[in-house]
Image 1 (tube, rainbow, N blue to C red):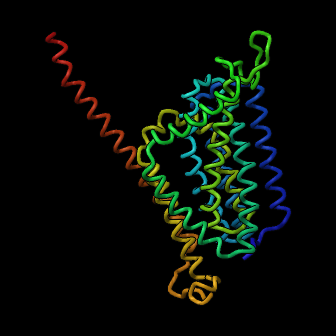
Image 2 (cartoon, one colour):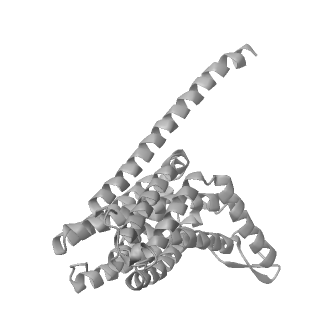
Image 3 (cartoon, rainbow, N blue to C red):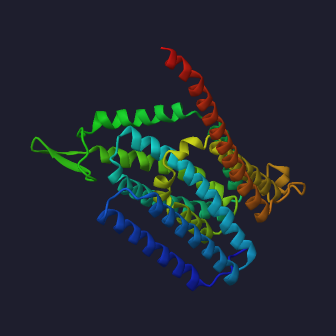
Length: 341
């Protein structure tokens, strides 16, 4: 089913979003700074409101089904983007990137992510149009990703990143210190790369991995390239400000990864069921679809996504408060011992 939206709206939307991203990029490079909580909050609220207005326009100019597809796709990509922030935090901490220049590194990372996702969206759309059985592969990949997401430890992630870092250190001469946000600097009269290059390569590698996860996930919600691309743009817009807004809070969202894993697992199951329902592979059921395989509608998907994120967030907050109370009790119990000494 094609998206019932005027072509001027699609083109106009992409132009406006491009202008906003360019303006955001110029602000970062002209005035590098650490945004305050208030500034970051206002930007995040602005981008969220912009996404909701966009969904409303799709409802008015199109229909409820595709507005719902955009919301479900945006929320899915947004949750995966928040998960991406965990890795960004690790990268920034490992390289001791000055907070003043973290904005620039994040913005470049977001641009890389947009380019990579744009490529994968075009490839995915072509595969879906020509090979309906690709949903089997997308579904199986998401099921595998969900299991990996739920059981992968942070130590495993750090070890893989260390391998990338060691490789770069061996093959590229890199200065010991940052030189602002420059990629190259002069040391002893010779031009060499700064650690910022390694940071950007690490972020780019992370973006590639997350693009491989996120594109099949959103194609499980909608097959409209326009909705897929705009949902990805809105998910990445404001990600830089969200990084500074959440900061250390990310570490307290202990159960967030399980919520994201459940979403990926649910969409994986949805894709497999869709593939079975519309099966055309001759060696499966004689090329006929399975009537018993249900098609999960957009609004059910939206409810599952919202519910999963809400449960994961609330559970994380409760766990963080419980841990804080336990630490408080432990400290109170230890204080008399210190007093006796």
